[in-house]
Length: 92
Image 1 (cartoon, rainbow, N blue to C red):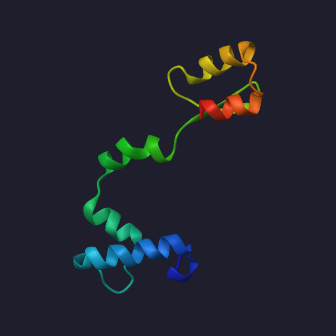
Image 2 (cartoon, rainbow, N blue to C red):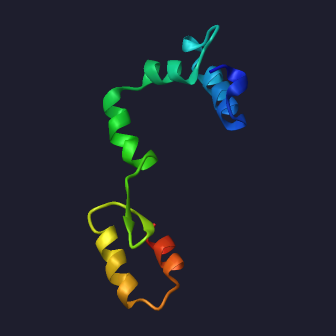
């Protein structure tokens, strides 16, 4: 993927990374270069749930999957007077 193919946000991020982390800058500098220079696998695994959460479909609604959220949504769905879509939004 070339820099021209990046979204405007990614191009802006790339400019900021080049400015503050010039020691890894060079011809063909990419966001992955920065990641491998200052990051590590354990850090990525620790933060992955924040950026790539798991979901569960409950009664046709997509709910964030954690210890109690799907069960709580199912219970609330049976007793709440809220619009079901608004209720699902409130659980996410």
